[in-house]
Length: 502
Image (cartoon, rainbow, N blue to C red; front, top):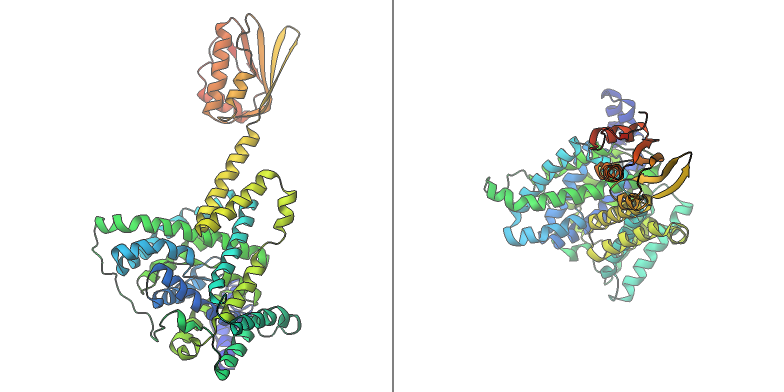
């Protein structure tokens, strides 16, 4: 009741725009409950990612707290959860092993600076170059990785572990059909944790992953030399972390957009991720980014606004400091079961039909994206490979160029069909008989477009060669853009060659 009264006071006395009111207070009860569920799920993830990075578990927990709280205010996608992630942790291991923890904090700060710069220069524009096939491959591979990450927490342990996973799956699947006031994952965590504690069951718990210290993060400056040598050490890691973090964050943002049928400011999200990482480095946390698994948990639990993200971060710290003794007793099979349901809900089951119906090139892009992500456990590599492969397929597709040769009224006509650019110039030159002599020739570009310098170079080559053989050449049908680039770059616009319109 006190909490609700406080919210009413805030909404009444603090002037907020309609947008901010909606983002912060449009879904209060569900946002708070969803944030609590996310906070509980963040703890084992943050500890596990800390282990992957080779640092103390508190580094990942502090990062998750700081990033979630800051991104709630600075991010561009309300309701999305950002914290320490596995994709980022994988990149940090060598830096920590070779140079130590302070260099990781310095790299985290620099990562934030780079991401802020990317946001200022509107790096989010690159999202439009990511094809649907890559998005499907990204989502599916991430769902599989989420599932695979849970396997060690329940496979080959004991029968009671299997039972708790099964009960968790049943609760998360069945309860929402009859009762939605409280998120099903939260019911599963509270009920099954209490059952495990009172019955003294032999189950692995959150505490088995690492030691949780009951203390708040404190501000400090990383103990590294401020010189070019330090910059040379951390910059390669920081640029990699910045790119991986933004790739995962922007793709997750798009997925949450689709799940909630709402839009988001991708450039603000990029800047927000940078601000969050910059600040986190000064509070003993490692770099992080958006988490699709926790974001899906948040959305599925009813979270939609910034309050859910803020609650996740604040409640995470509350759990550690106040309820730390209880948190470490949460059974891992319960959290594993919740994440398994997340992976099932994340996977695009319609992609099997997509493989059968989609063009072979798109199907190949989806499969390659998934294969690379699963092989490397690096989402950015899979996405980059998928985008590059899509670009190659696209270039191959539009590079098909055809030339029809006809003769009428004393003219020899070459009708060009298709796009003329660097990948199609060979077909263009092969389609024109450069051995023609003493003819009046028209090269018709009505059904074509001239795109680049390579295309103009091919036109020059054909025109100059035909003119050497005593032909009279006219270029016709050039659209405005094609005429402009030809007039600007051609070297054959001399007497004997008449461009279109002359």
